[in-house]
Image (cartoon, rainbow, N blue to C red):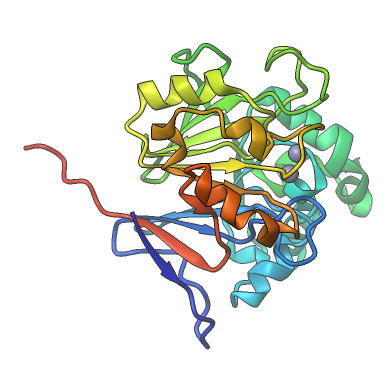
Length: 290
Ligand SMILES: [Zn+2]
Ligand SMILES: [Zn+2]
């Protein structure tokens, strides 16, 4: 994996590469960070792009990269916290009324109901009547169903966004009292092209990391992290108990504004480091055998 810093320039951030896989964090901050944007991730490969999560700060963050939110044509949403979905209303309304484009979204039927009925409907549905009825999810996003994919010891799906392969799996995020992913509210993590694990939001769940690391040839792991132990994210003190081989390819994301105090400890514990905003994480093209 090669890291290069993206310097702001006149041209918009490119949503394509010559063919290799690129990860670019629109932000690396926690839900309430004021120094970073929220942990939302652009995945780009050749002519394909996918935005994983679109939080409250995301449309502004994209704008700062020279991109209107309507430049994003493909979404994957991991769960319903505002740092992951707060920008979707803007994406939907700008798409319908200004850009006249309907982006697609990889989403299970179950989560589509949750996302629309509990979050998006109030702000989108009643702006307009279509054949006498309020707008529905399908009027603003094209849903793409992932396929159930029982390869992990938890609910999982596979999906394809152009040439980008995705494995989606349930995580153990909320409530803080849930014993495992089964009794947690719907939330997802993602394996990208079998090479990168992105947890989005989860509590400490070593079985997940051990299982994914054994099953996929992971080159990098991007894991959410908070600097205190409690609540709904894995903490630095919990994550330090992971095997050294996992830690050395793990970059911490979704972190608080006091990260500077922990940089030294993160190094000492053997992590790859903090994930960074404005950095391109590039994974060289893999030649297919034959
Ligand atoms: Zn979050
Ligand atoms: Zn969350």
